[in-house]
Amino acid sequence: MSTTDSYAEANNKIDAKKCAEFWDSSSDFVFNETGKEYANWDSLYVDIKNWYSQPLDSVQLIWKERNIKPLNHNAATLYSKFIFKAKYKSGLVYKSTASLTGILLKKDGRWKMTQGYNAIKIIKN
Image (tube, rainbow, N blue to C red):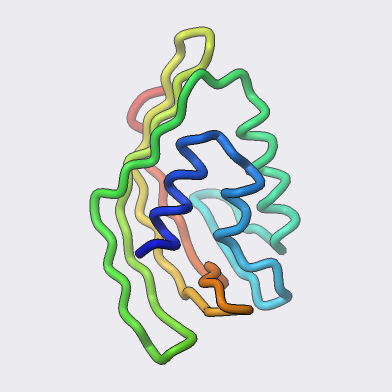
């Protein structure tokens, strides 16, 4: 739970580098998001940096549901739902709901999202 709390906090602080720590940077990484497949961690990190380089006033990632099931001491599944809201300095607001599912692996003492899928539904843009 603390790993997902840290991920939400990093988003809320508009900290791309800290957000990226949630994701596994190994060759095991596989991730898809509505309409996009990330070939590797680097491609995801570029998108995270680009998103947070926009003129944003604030960001909120609010967990609505998180279900983490341990598989063993070094692996767990995650199913979650969250609301994501970004307010631009122009006043424009982007709001979406999403479901994030995946496999978390413990590597070097830290939990990392290694394989997953994020389904996004835009509410307001």
